[in-house]
Amino acid sequence: MLLAKSTWSEIEAFLTRSTTVVVPIGSNEQHGPTGLLGTDWMCPEIIAHEAQKDRDDLLVAPTFNIGMAQHHLGFPGTISLRPTTFIAAIGDWCRSLAGHGFTKIYFLNGHGGNVATIEAAFSELYAEASFSQRPRGFAAKLKNWWDLEGVNGLAMVQFPSGHGSHATPSEIAVTQWAYPDAIKIAKYDPPVAPTGPIREAADFRKRFPDGRMGSDPAQATPEKGGALVKLAAEKLLKDVRAFSEEAAP
Ligand SMILES: [Zn+2]
Image (cartoon, rainbow, N blue to C red; front, side, top):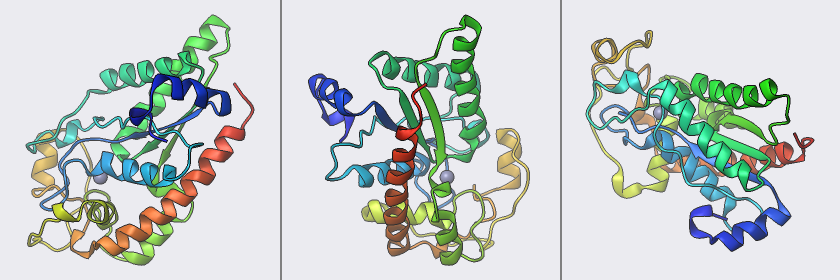
């Protein structure tokens, strides 16, 4: 069930059955010569939308599609929030949903650069409860889609070398499966990109001239992407169920 395609009365009725909601969250940022700018928000959205198909007990909120990507701003098309803005926005998404009675807010993330800020946003929310000595009323959870049970293992079987950490063949395969009309071709030079530290945008572009980090996206295929989505969607349902069953905050 997609929140964006529901009415308020359908959400009110849903809340009598479940108080859990899944929020795909990612980033709009460069993904090398062939990766789509939306890759990091598309992957969790594709997986969450696949998981809710034919199920009215899994509610998926609109995708939070801009994240913390300051280091990619040297590449056109990247849009970033600074960490403080991102923390404030995540807080208001959670406060909005919790105000309607959602007690479990599950963020399915598609961008490693978001992790520290999302966790800080959760700590800010919990701190509001702790300082006022009142229960927060909801719990938030962060899960990267590749950390769903078995998913990274499958990616390592599919791409034993040249997986890398940015513009990876696994994430590009997922978008190829969902958006075959948007598959791009380029010659990668070198075939496997360099690795190194992440700092500010100008330094990033100097170290990683075509935007990739340690990856060889030429190995991506829609079929491999489809296998990743199928497994991830199945394990997402399992993980969300376990989160729903945790004691209410
Ligand atoms: Zn990515």
